[in-house]
Length: 264
Image (cartoon, rainbow, N blue to C red):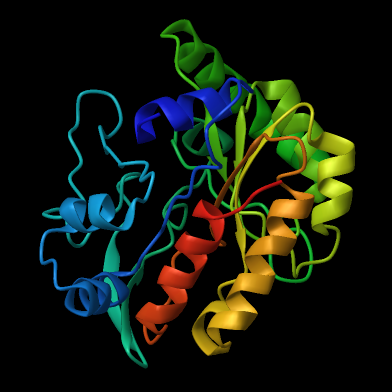
């Protein structure tokens, strides 16, 4: 199977020749990995490493085109951003509160914004408030995407377990990034309770194991993800969000190769 076939088969819960593996990289890690492998082209790098990379396309909203490579200073939702240096990494942080100038509920209802629902320790918003204000919009988006024969991948960091049944109800097909160090996000229980209803994407811990662990630590972490989130399929291993600046290229390669060699 090629990568396209392998990803689609996993999403459809059909047999695959091996478990697919995706990577999310910060620009600094991509640069270090390219230098380590000796391949300057990003997509040739993925091909050389055998990564089943899910490529990102940013169509924007409505008729407005969004290209993250040239749209510095604004995000896909139209929120101003600023570049902030943190250690070895540079991030785009919000430069102004997106709802700061709004004075009425009608203005808020007309604004297209939606994002993470969980922090590292708890929820950012109550389930009741999310169901009232955000779920109807998400359900419409999922219905639109499904009408074109496509799958819905939904991203939320943090402690988001209580939202998962409602994400499934809304039509979400794939949940990312499975930050399992957060309360309620334990891998085995997520798989037990939701594994037959949603595909998991991510899971490989990127705050401690990937940046600071040994290659053996990385292999053990990946195997645990495969044995839990990947039991009986329905899982695309990837880092739990972007692999952070300073992560050794050897650890990235260890993650990729461990998935590729995995025999259930």
